[in-house]
Amino acid sequence: MAKKQKKPRKPMQVWKIYDSKSGTLARKTTSCPKCGPGVFLAKHKDRTSCGKCGYTEMQKK
Image (cartoon, rainbow, N blue to C red):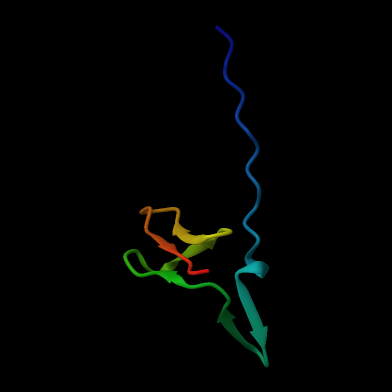
């Protein structure tokens, strides 16, 4: 049986997560309330969700 090929992973784009103003770093996105300050919530069209624990916040229209 042939080995299954792995998909290449994209490098994490840290410059999209943080904003640097006047020499200090500020977070652009919110962190997960369950996982803590090191895990960010992903922004989707109608919700924000955590990739680690599955926590989801639905956005109002």
